[in-house]
Amino acid sequence: MSENSEKLPENQWRGIHLNRMGLRISGISFSISRDGSFDSAPVEIGVSLDLYIHWLEIALQHLYEAQAAHEELLACWDSDDANRKNKALERDFSSSMQCVLASAVAVDAFYAMVRDFVTIPKKTIESWERKRLSRAKRISEVFRLGFRISSAGFKSMRSHLCELFKWRDWCVHPEAGFDKPVRYKELHVATEWRFVAFRFDNAKNSLAIALSVIAQLLNQGKPRIPELAKHCERIEYLVAPLIDVWEREFGTLYSRQSKQKERGT
Image (cartoon, rainbow, N blue to C red):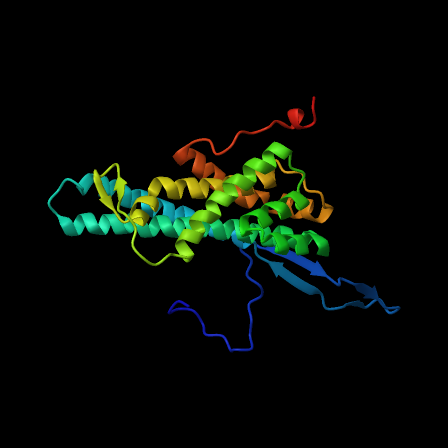
């Protein structure tokens, strides 16, 4: 609150603030009595927030930070300033790791949205449990239940999601113990493998997977459930700016299909 703002009593509200949210108004009813007076019943208002949009933005912000840190790392590595080199290496590492995590969380959040519209048979869930299906494969299966995906498209999506979640697991389930140092080709040194793995290029690949999967399901996917289709149409515009930003900075994210081609004309 600014210094010039009037402090409101605790029980006084200024309405509902909406920012990239879904709004649902229900229970609307009006009546006119014989004397011509007008009356209405209280309406019910619901709001919703698609968190995967925000997680994609968080991942992109960390990717920019990793990019800047990586450029600084390459610029200073041949200098004698050990402190500067170590700081750049760790900034690249930490920002890249956070980008990977945020990318995986974005996919998980998108899955949670789709899951709300999908009915999964009990036998299917029991089969997943029996086979100890990984998180990435379960997410892929739910996407296939929610959208019409070609066999080749499904295999590609599942492969990419398995790769993304493998990197996520490396972040959140680190193994103890010692490993052999791994070569960092750009720096011509060997170091702990995670400093090599979690760098800008790999962070970019992780976000590319998350953004591409979500964007293609929203833009080119064919929802099997009418309610899911309506939801996707409503939120598609929220992802579009991220795609534009990505393609300005890093190039084409995925190939587009024309509507005529999709209809087979």
